Image 1 (cartoon, rainbow, N blue to C red):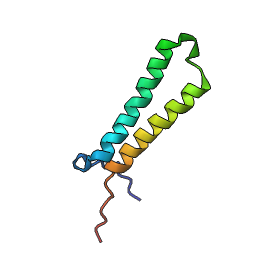
Image 2 (image 1 turned 135 degrees about the vertical axis):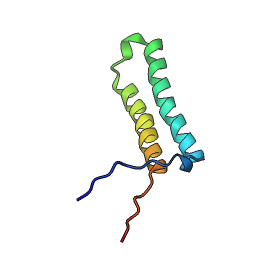
Image 3 (image 1 turned 180 degrees about the vertical axis):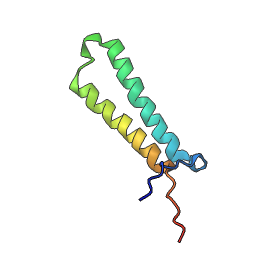
Image 4 (image 1 turned 45 degrees about the horizontal axis):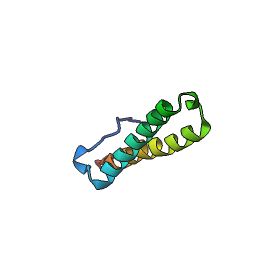
Length: 74
């Protein structure tokens, strides 16, 4: 059994990848700005839940859009 690294093709970068990158950045910027504005709210579950949605959607979406399926040689 052969295990290879996941291949990422940067040539497949498109508008969806850009939107997902913006989603990732929006989640990070939202969390940082909220903690700066309300210093005692860094452990607020509402802030975490909204941040997780944006960040995970960004990371997983970017991986899915740039993933290159392995070719099988028969």
